[in-house]
Structures are given as structure tokens and as C-alpha cells.
Image: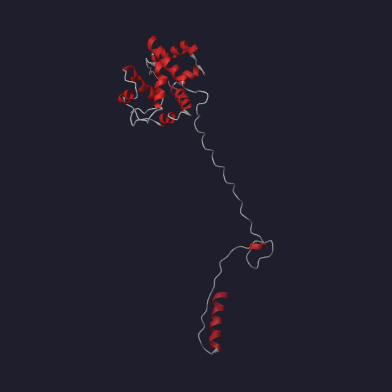
Length: 211
């Protein structure tokens, strides 16, 4: 859960300030000088920078984030800010789903208890929060992308039983032949007209191979 303690005394200028973010390019680093350059030179305006950090628009070092760039698209700006407000002020939405100005005392009390704040700072924290609500769309805030579904497992295919069509030669229909080793012996006979030479060779083969 979270609840920032940042606030600005010029909360009435919050809408004007966020509208200014959509003009021109995002800076490489959002500094006090850039704040002055876009028309907010007062020392009271400096609180806008930690407010942007609390909303996730700037990194701790002041670099604009993807959320900052997304907010510059006017077609989705209110929804982007809605997500940012819900993230930053999550503790408030636990006690009130749709807080309004009528809940001001309840909201101030939450800031007091969480941050041990006195009346005036707690009031300014609450007014800063309500100023953000006026320019944010909580109902149409873009939800986080749904996780990709797990791929369906590929069903295993049982092996095809060996049938008579793919059995070894000489096997009867419907039976399965056990595979074995086969040897191919090549004999180079000498060129001779003496029949006894051939008879002796074949006799020797029969004795050694057939038994």
C-alpha cells in the first residue's frame, strides 16, 4: 500500500500544470529550471517535481517515465493519470472507493495518522489529492495488461502398432516379427576352370557359417 506525503500550496494550479506537460517535448531531466521555463517560477511550484515522482511520472533522478510520455497523449491522459493516482494513493481507495470533497475530513484524518501530520499539512495533502482527482478519470483508467495465457499442452500421440503391412518379410498376417541382424557376405571367386576349387570354397563356407 502507499500514501505520499507530498503536497503543494498552489493546488489550484495543478490542472494548469498538468496541461502544460502536454505541450512541447518532454525534457531529458525535469529540473527546477525546466519548471521555470514552462511558466512556473515560484518556489511554491517546486513541489510539483516531487509530486510527479510520487505519481510515477518521473524517476528518482528526474527522468520522465513511460507514464509521463503516455500522459502527453491527450486522448488517454485522464486515464493515465487515473492509474497513477490509484497507484500513489492506494491507501485512500481502501477506505473509500470513490472519494469526493464530502470525504475531506476522512481523507485528512488518514494523512494525519499515516504521516503524523498536523492540521495544515494534512489539509494541503488532501487538497492536492482532490485537485488531481478533478483531472483524472478513475472509471476508465487503463488496466494493466493481462498475462499471456499458457500454451495448451500438445496431446501425445500413441505409437502406431506394427501390423502385417509393415512387418518384416516372411511374417504371417497379423503377427509381429522381431527385428534381427542381417549380414550380407560377398564372395569373390577366383577365375579358374577347376570345379574342385569352387567345391572346396562352398564346402568351407557351409562348415563355418551354417555348421
